[in-house]
Image (cartoon, rainbow, N blue to C red; front, top):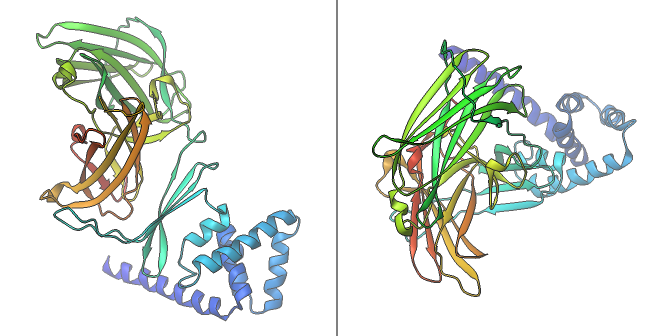
Length: 432
């Protein structure tokens, strides 16, 4: 294995050394064209840089644009000029902002993160230079971090109407079916606790199932709620159909409105066609919400928060929220956080809330903050519905906990929430 690795690295080293002299033998105009072609068509770019004469390179470039709209060529050349001038000063061959700019143009929003040390914590936090580019109409976000003299693309994430979330839709209720339990049906389950009104809580159950083929498939779902005396106080039986995809991971959500007590939740799914059955039990305490004692909800990690519509059951006041049910993510992959804060003091009908998200390495919990986000919110009403977008950037693989400190700037009162229902968020090299 060691010999193979050395051989592979030798090939990569030779490739870089071949391209670099070829690139720097080009005049500046040709370098720009090569970088542009590399972003649009890597095969043509390789052909371009290998041609021995300027005459042949020009002929290939003209051939590339033949039968294409002149406006597209003008736009392309304007973009390569801008990208070369602004991102190609130090490492034009390796700065990955260049191909993204050439392909997509000026981002709707370009956030620059500059190196800084956060003072006032027991450890200083060093933030590497980074940029986040958002293309709102395309529903794309790119995360770059500077490594050496170039910015490297760490992650690309999507949002908006183009992102379809496969889900389970209820087609009938109060259905009783005799289930044959030949095979196990596995699913993932998590939850969030929220105040609905005084002495009434909203328990949200989040479920995901992996389905290989939805053809002719229907799912039977049963939910039983038991109180502290083990008496069944609520039961529902529904028939569901998968929508928006033929296979993949499908999401479901159930909202239960309960008094602030302790409960045992039993939830089961049955694949009627394939005779598969799965069941999970969940012990949940809602006692903290008695008489409005708890003034902040659970902090729920989310796969996506945006303003597109999937189904009503995923809707929140800030838009649709698709929960992160299995808290395992590839390293660098951005995700979201959702929380509600209650009983805020208002002035002229508005609250003023400052949120601080602190990221801890679970394996080094002696107050070692590895990242931090701070923001201010001015919104109407005495309840804050908050959705934050977190970019892990180049955090290494590991287990992390996120703590939210929400300070009411009008009353001085602080509320704290933690991703406690998930134990920790795990970043891995590949998604498990």
